[in-house]
Amino acid sequence: MFSLDLFLNALAAGVLLGGFYAAVSLGIAVSFGLLDIANLAHPVFVMFGAYLVYTMNSRFGMDPILAGVLFTPLFFVLGALLYQLYYASFERKGAESLRGLVFFFGILFIVEVGLLLQFGVDYRLVEARYIGESLHLGPVGLPFRLLIPCVAGVSLTALLYLFLSRTFYGRAIQGVAQDAFALRLMGANPFKVKRLAFALASATASVAGALLIMIGPVEPAMNREYIGRAFAVTVLGGMGSIGGTLVAALMLGVAESLTATFYGPAWGVAVSFGVLLLALAVRPSGLFGR
Amino acid sequence: MASRLVIRDVDAGYGAVRVLHGVSLEVREGETVALLGTNGNGKSTLINCIMGIVRPDAGEITLERDGQRMELIGRAPEEIVHLGITLVPEGRRLFPKLTVEENLLLGAFRDGARRDIPRNLAFCFEAFPVLQSRRKQLAGNMSGGEQQMLAIGRALMAAPTILLVDEPSVGLAPVLVNRVIAKIKELKDRYRLTVLMAEQNFNQATKIADRGYIIVHGQIAFSGATAELREHELVKKYYLGV
Image (cartoon, rainbow over all chains, first blue to last red; front, side):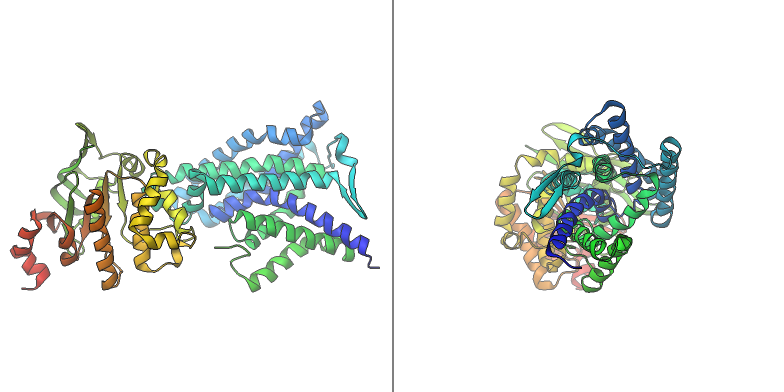
């Protein structure tokens, strides 16, 4: 039953999948981890991104990654508007925690139903020359449809990390949930800082969507399984630590891939929460929590 | 760059509670001014009025710089910071989960401070060597005295023309109060920093202030040079227990 080749291939696939999970989780790591906003709708934005990429790909034959990058400004603006609405309706009144959750649940359903009405329940996929090809390293095959999302996901993570740690606005984003008043005393407007952070978090969804539809066919309700994964990755990584998010995403990818290979794919999602529970029992602040 | 902070006839309060009644006060270039008073007399309210956190009902607060007069009332705190007034808030208000260095760099957020970061950082590390040795440590894991040093250092990173310090001694052990006060004096002596310090610890504050104002029930009861303050009846009555 057990073979080394099988194990190595599952391991490699897991690492590649993990790089992609990081891309999906970044939005949650920023909104939930740094801003304390439980944005349940982020995965459905990823789906929305995937469908926009699908449209560009099927109509104009555009490269999926290129399409994903092209749509980032749109998602940036949508994110800024959504935060503005959330702020005016909940955060300003100090009623954000529970009602905010319901708000994002509502957004989730609206976008999901919108996608269903527009694209139906059929699985959709994208085409590109390289998607069917693989890179072979000895017995291990690295399919391009996983390798490219991994590289793109890790690059996106690195970009966000550099922005958050090297720029003035990045540091302000890290500080805003800790003490918004103190941030005003530094000369920064907390509302604008949070809006920028939320907009950036949303902008990652269009790239993540491109990666998602490159890995495999999508249908609108698929966002649900990514809610659990992305929140698990965020908490496991240590609430807002971008490096931690990447490590946690890789761990989850490997754990899921090994389980799927040796015990069956049905266990996949259960693994996210299993890993999360186990990690939290040992280290409640997450792997890289401060 | 000659700058001066002038507060004239300020009334302020919170809802129906009136805290300040016609308060006037002035801080000139290079001076350290103490705002003295026991708890609940309006020291922090006045500081908050200057920073734009509390909006006065009457009076004016102006910053004069190079012959220009800028009205501060009606401006948001972040705008006032951009004009070069920074506050070391009561309770320090650090970002506990950011490192010492990240806290300091956030202090330099205002546009006017960004290009001078290397110089100001060197200045902070020189004034507070403990910050240099702890630069990678999380601010929340430091002792109270170190946190107060960091709070002052963070405000200095903004390269302020006027530094406001609200109750630097609150919550600190007496030995640390001495150290923090000595540091503020050092900043004033060596760098001619302009400081307005609200403090209830009379003896500590008068060690370093050039002048002082005593605020009682929201009114300036007395003002004068430090030596005069020590001899004043009110001080003997309220602070020295004579």
